[in-house]
Structures are given as structure tokens and as C-alpha cells.
Length: 134
Image (tube, rainbow, N blue to C red; front, side, top):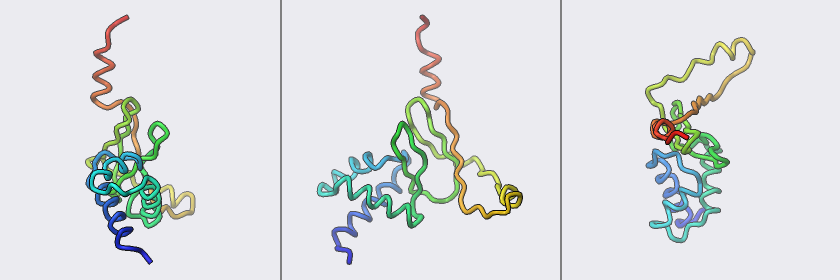
């Protein structure tokens, strides 16, 4: 049986993730939660993120520089990951491709898809153009 304290922490983790547009890692969420939940542990954050993922109420967006990043928005949408600074952005104006033809050809059922684009964001691209010449 869950205690009120566990439920409060679980709700705080989910609310913090859903309020963030930065697609934070578990460690970043932990740091964000420390002010309002000083007794929360990093293990609690990891355990609840795993639970939320298994329930389908959050998703793992990508592993950026060896660190898993999470998204509280589960509606299908495209992500952009900057290979320079590691920023992860939602591209809500880009439509997900229709993969039904693949399923038909392969004779399978596709339950989920995730499209992630990667490259340099505007800021990182600007910094490479402004770098001094050798």
C-alpha cells in the first residue's frame, strides 16, 4: 500500500516533468525537485520514471551524451536533438510519417513510432560560423 508521502513525491515528479519543455534527465529532474521536495532521493526519481514509462504516461526521448532524457508529452510528435549542446526540442509542426505501409509489407503490427532528428541547433550552428579562423 502506498503512503501519502510516496504518492506526493510521485505526483511531484510527474508534474515537474510535464511542466518542463527541456526533456530533462532523471538527474536534472532530481535537482529541479530538491527545492520543493528536499527529502526526495535520486533513486525515487529513477524508480518513478521507470514506473511512468512502463505505464505509458511518459516516454524516453533519446539518450544524449550517454544520459536518458524524458518527455511528459505522450502524443506523437517529432524531436530534434542538438549534437552540439544536447538540447532536445519538440517539433510539433512536423508530422509523424505514416508507417502503415511498412506494417502491411512486413505483415506485422506497429504499436509505436518515434522520429528523432539530430544535428546542430541554431545557437550551435551560429557558434561554428562565428569561430575565429586559424
